[in-house]
Amino acid sequence: MTVRYTINSRAAPAPSLRTGRLSAMRASGSCRSHFDRLSQFLALFVAGLFVMEATAQHAGDIGVGRNSAGQLMIRPYDPNDTPCFDPNEGIGLLVPVPDPPTPPTSFRSTSPGFDANFGPAPEWDYWPLEYGASIRLVAVEDPAPAFYVKYSTQTIRHAGDWITLGSYVLHRHPVFIVDCNDPAYDPIRTLWWCTFVLRDVGSTAYTDSDPFKLRFGLVQCQPGDVNGDGAVTFADIDPFVATLGAPEMATLQQRCAADTNLDGYVTFADVDGLVELLSATGP
Ligand SMILES: [Ca+2]
Ligand SMILES: [Ca+2]
Image (tube, rainbow, N blue to C red):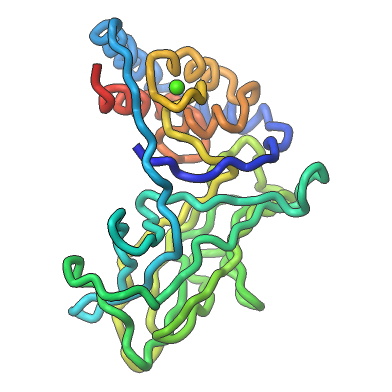
């Protein structure tokens, strides 16, 4: 299990009843089968007590390199190597601006950044960029509602937008922003994201990286640990069901932990994920 981000000292803004309810209702068509699975699981392991240990958060910046075929790539995470941020696992932490107790006008993060100065990793065919590279971060989808990325005068608000990351020795920290004043901002949402590629417009002419999704949230949580006791057990089922039924009444921490499929909301689509987390720990 992976701890995904660190606890934010500030509570969430007052949640919206509307969007969370609508999300749950949109997913309700499959609620019967999901609850059937949960019931079957409970019957099967009713005597069990599952404990899930957290591992260290993925830390550091995103390593920007290329493979031997000349395609840009991000450096895979290795717990025994220099820490780097793996978008497949890590989630960036947003902080409120301005500081509490003033109501925030935005949530922002400058981490992870992008760094081309990691060493080679031959086992992954990961190599440093060569002189002449000029790398951009390019959005390949519209960012999540109310979410955008900014560096200096460059902004990513739509698919196709880009910002400059730099040369073969680049090390840059764009600002990832959730705008609370955006009409599309939903305070009950717990995650925002965008999918990007790395693009070389320099003389090295590397091909685009594979797409990767960067996610950002407001708190750290362990998926499935809805009661916040540090483990995923049967004791999380009741608070999960309560959060599912009334996400607007749950804490930010509970909504984060109950969102097992990482779509930013607690819906019936998260039931399977909870079952899998419970199953993964074993009786
Ligand atoms: Ca728990
Ligand atoms: Ca979800």
